[in-house]
Amino acid sequence: MKKGLLVHPDGPDHTPWPTELAARYRAAGHWRGQTFGSLLTLLATAYPDNIAVVGAGNRWTYLELDERAHRMAAGLVELGVRPGERVVVQLPNVPEFLSVVFALFRVGAWPVFALPAHRDTELRHFSTQSEAAAIITVDRHDRHDHAAMATSLARALPSLRHVLVLGDAPEGAVALHDVDAAPVELPDPDPEGVAFLQLSGGSTGLPKLIPRTHDDYLYSVRESARICALRPDSVYLAALPVAHNYPLSSPGVLGALHAGATTVLAPSPDADTVFELIERERVTITGVVPPLAAAWAQAAARTNRDLSSLEVLQVGGAKCGRELAARIGAALDVTVQQVFGMAEGLVNYTRLDDPEEIVLGSQGRPISADDELRIVDPTDPSAASTAEVPAGSVGALLTRGPYTIRGYYRAAEHNATAFTPDGFYRTGDLVRRLPGGHLEVVGRAKEQINRGGEKIAAEEVENFLMAHPGVLDAALVALPDAYLGERSCAYVIPVDGVETPTAEELRRFVKQQGVAAFKVPDRVVVVDRFPVTGVGKTSKRELRAALVAAHQPNQ
Ligand code: OOB
Image (cartoon, rainbow, N blue to C red):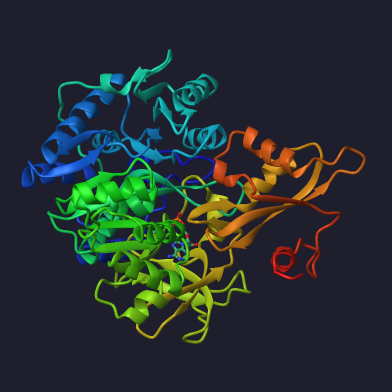
């Protein structure tokens, strides 16, 4: 740790790369000692009048975005926000997302990227875990009162000194537009230090925070923009919630900015909204999750919007099968690009000139020649990162490299199992490596459900269910689904002697705990007992098999 900072009892904020590797990444030109704040200054000089961002009725040039970020940074400093402090940011797809995060980058405070779908329980967890000093949110979004949620959280958590609200600020909050002061010179933060905290999809109890540095993230952004052939005249449309790693940086809005291109922020990903924006703004590239790709492919057949500007449609976040990949390419007359990434780091892309067979049948290959990948025996949890399965076989993917974290934020205990002793991150994904180095994702070894790209940690939802007095035990498993890829199904054992709760009651109970709606189990099945494995653990494999069998036609 630099500058004599005390290590938190739960573990360090940031686990740096070993000295020799860091030196190698610098020498290779991956890490260039640049911060996001200084990048925006350069961009505003290089492309002052290009449109940087379009959204919510606004069109800001690079110069305008730069000035807004400078003024807001000064306003944040005036409020008392200091370098290294954490600030939870929960904003929908609006241009202020960019002025806020670049202002925080300039102050050296760390945004913690919450999603608009997160509710009280998740925000409380991120704020507590990071001892956040402030929360920046919107008044209302999707019929939810975010301002009320944030102010009541701040009343309960002493560390949360400020609530800043875009729109109408209630009592106890400051209007974001008032966070505005004459620009001041601020010291540039350490480029090898943490820039922000991203959220992990999680597989254990509570979501972990992911510390990403300026140097490592900028490297992935720069290379992503190059791989996706972004130019100053490209137009990137963010259809997914922009705080997520995929629309943020793969290449996402940051990749678009890096190229001097325009980002269009879609308020909703539905085909009507998005097609209108594609036509109006002459969008050239966008990224979606597989269910959205399927919905857009269907809608494209009936639309009279002109979608001819669209060149590249990225699909990722969850597995996109061969049929769907072929269908969307044809329906939208675009180059399909598969993206297999993770907020922890590693991102794989099919390249724009890859042969069709690779685009349809793989999830891409890594960004960097310095991404180290190991594919190991998935049945051996202690598998050494050197014992690889034979070439072409399926195994569990481990990775380390110039933009993959070495440890979660303040999570020493979890880090001991999430990483190998030599620093490889255990992705929990089951993959096969094709001869050219592309990966095919064939499954998952982690306790996570991927609901159309939205990740659900089984244990987190099991804990919500077990808080009910009528529930003795709960097991959440994935139910294969033609549209979303997977839905969630909760198996529940009721407590003897009290009234058995109904499925509807349990779903309501989970929701009432203030959690993102996508975590509420799609189905709840009450059973007497769980099947067990040889050592007596709940056999989720058998539960999944029972579920699949129950959903076979004619049975
Ligand atoms: C992206 O990031 P996360 O952190 O929400 O989720 C990561 C996990 C991966 O470990 C994998 O299990 C799954 O999501 N995943 C895919 C996939 N892309 C992600 N599984 C199969 N096929 C794919 N194409 O989801 C993310 C981050 C950056 C770029 C793209 C996606």
